[in-house]
Length: 125
Image 1 (cartoon, rainbow, N blue to C red):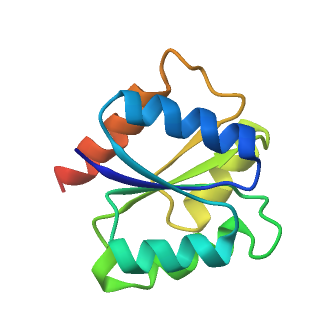
Image 2: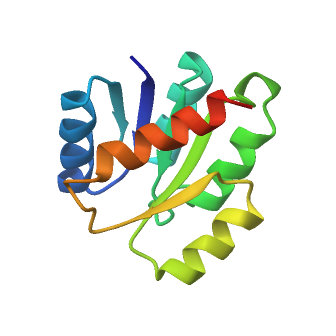
């Protein structure tokens, strides 16, 4: 079972992601803003963090950069979870040390598989 934190301010998106990931056997926590998300990430050292890029308090890029500065989180996958256009999101993810991008709206049939693949790829490093 992998530990995942979903940092997402849209309650519907957060619930859907959480439901799908829990159904796939993951332990999931939801943070509704960046500050809460960073606190959870630092306290639990999750396997993966899904970060919405457009949060109300701290933007997703700043959260990604802060996570990447923590040596204790070097094995944590960071995935941009965004409705931004794919190309723009990919550029942003690369610039901030993100491991990948999952765009919204999510494909509910593939979402848990996508997340699991990021966790497995990071575990191989």
